[in-house]
Amino acid sequence: MALKRSNRDTLDGPRGHTRMAYDGIRMMLFHNEIVAGQKISYRDLAERLGMSQTPVIQALKWLEFQQLVRHEPNRGYTTAPLNLQEVEEIYDLRRLIELDLLQRTLKRLDDAMTGRLKAALDAHRKASKDIYLYDRLLKDMEYHLTLASFSGCAVHQKTLKNLFDLLYLKYGAKFLFSSSMHSADSDHQDLFQCIAARDARGARSVLGQHITRVKRHVIKSVEKMLKATRI
Image (cartoon, rainbow, N blue to C red; front, side, top):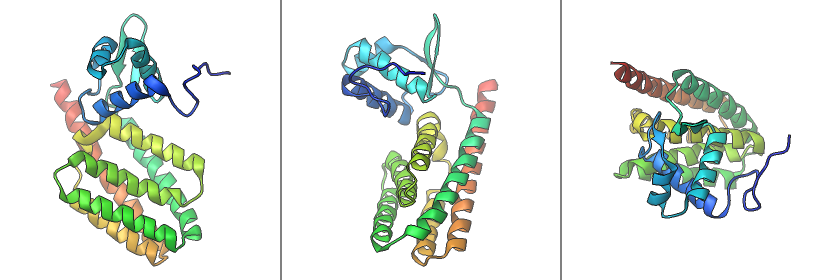
């Protein structure tokens, strides 16, 4: 089945003004300026972004394709509601992908890669010490994606990036900040030490426990939010 797209858009994502609208809406989602289950007015978005409605509507179509927003005939767009099962599936798939890529990475690892991972670790630790909470999440993601990039598996990396998009844009800081940043710092440091030492068993254990621990924190936060909305 052929996918229809404009000359400015590609299968990899929107371009031009659509891209500007897409990036702007993503930032609103990330900063919880648009929350889960909220009705979206593309007219209001166009006004906030200082552009016409056409690129905003095109951007919303891309976000719908990524399952971050929904469209219903005669009702327009809404953000996707919170879904506990979805959170569990995201973290379970993350664990499978990251542990598989870790094995592949350790077979390819060289000094240059180790240096790049150390730089990503240092960037995350620095962000964890300042007041810019959203930057912590971005640096956390960059650390994991940097490690995954050494595997040489492009499709796996793209899938992992899409999972982070779902987590960070739909569930965002509101839930992910519930996990201990100190714990994340420690896990990332331990993981780096195992990788630098080529300790495959230790690295696998640390990474698996880290993802499981964060999953548990996020699920508890989502459960509390869902319970509060039912009261």
